[in-house]
Each structure stands twice: as structure tokens, then as C-alpha cells.
Length: 261
Image (tube, rainbow, N blue to C red; front, side, top):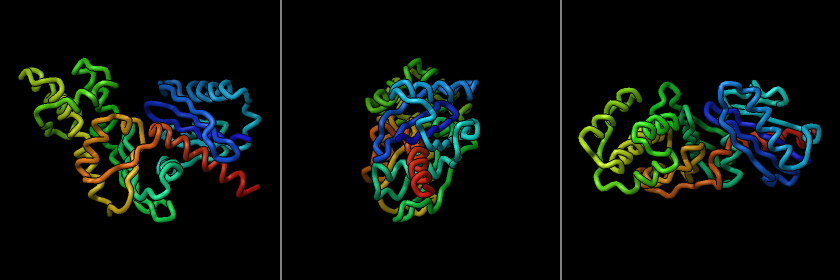
């Protein structure tokens, strides 16, 4: 028996399959693109093909993410806040604060000792401090997004980007390039700017206990290191922080099926 969680994000769509024992069986990630329903169908088909099953063999499906209501096969929709709470505590049961750094927004979620959502705050008004911000900056620096974090870790000077708007920050980066600053130092400034925004959100929530990272941007090594440094603490990093939302949705599918059986 299997349970499926689907996370339809602004940049990527993720699907994750759990078995009856709540073990992760497989997952798949695709770019969301403009045709959301086609992407949802494709990511589900990939999961079914990987495991030689059909949708009929899945008794409960839960969707999350900004496009969750486009998942026609889902029996239940849940918010990203709830999904990430269940996903993070699956790996790290003592998590009390989740830093979810996604493609278009950043969320900080405080949990109770029981793992329930206690409070949250998010920055969804501007791309600054998100994966989209990194994409824009990587293009300007003509550097693959996958290499930007390692570049930043090789910095020798701590440059600053002062603007909180992506458009104006882009102008600052272009000015730094014109000054012939090292790519590594500019990359550091970009990552430091993102972490500034994350810390500002953290400071607005009562901080306590273990911190877990989630979201695709959390895979970035410079983001990981700067968050640890700025918060002066170790942080938990799941095996793949990008699938935490889909994992939480699958856990809720499992729970709903067995609690209502």
C-alpha cells in the first residue's frame, strides 16, 4: 500500500511516495513551468513508472504548495506550512524552528514540542531572499546556479549588498562587476544578503530549540554555512530539503487513511 504527496511549487513540482510503514519509496522533481496540470501528470507518471504501480493502487493522495488545488487526484489539500512541519519532524522530531527557503518565498515556522505549528512568518512580497533572487544573480555573474554557493565560500573580502529590492540589488551587483571585484566576493555578498533577510524573519519569532532547513535553496552550501554562523548554532539538514513539503503531504495522506479507516 502506498501514499502519495505532491508539492506544486512556483519553480518546481515534487512528488513523493511512502509505503505502509511510512518509509520513503521514491521521489521525483520537475520544473513546474507554465502548464501546471501537465507537469503534475508527468511527475506522478514518473513515480508510478519507477514503482510499477498505477494510481488505483494509492488509496490517499495529499497535495500542497501554491498550485495544490490543481492536483485533481488529491483527496486533501494542505498548506506548505503544515506540510513542512510534518516533513521536517519526520527526519528531526525535535525540530522547533523550520527555515523554508523556496523559489519565490521564505518561511520561518515555529513548532511546539508536539510538532504542531505554533507561529510562522513569511516573506512573499519580493523575490529578494529566495531561489529566484539567486537565479537572477547567477545569470548576471554568468555562473551556474549549482556552483554559486561554492564560489561564495571561496571569498576573501566581505562585500555588502544594501538594497532589499531584487532590481536595485541587481544594479549593485553590476556595479561591483564594473569595479572588477572578484566573482567569489560578489557571490558572498549575494548569499549574505539572502541570509540577512532570513535572520530578520527569525528575529520576529521567538526562537527556541533545534533548527531544520527545508526548501531547494537550503541545498546551497554557502546558505547553510552563513545561517549556522549568523545564528551561532548547528542546523539540521535533511537528506534532500527540496522534497520536505511533498514528504509532509505524503505523511498526512498516510495518517488520514489510517485514522479514518
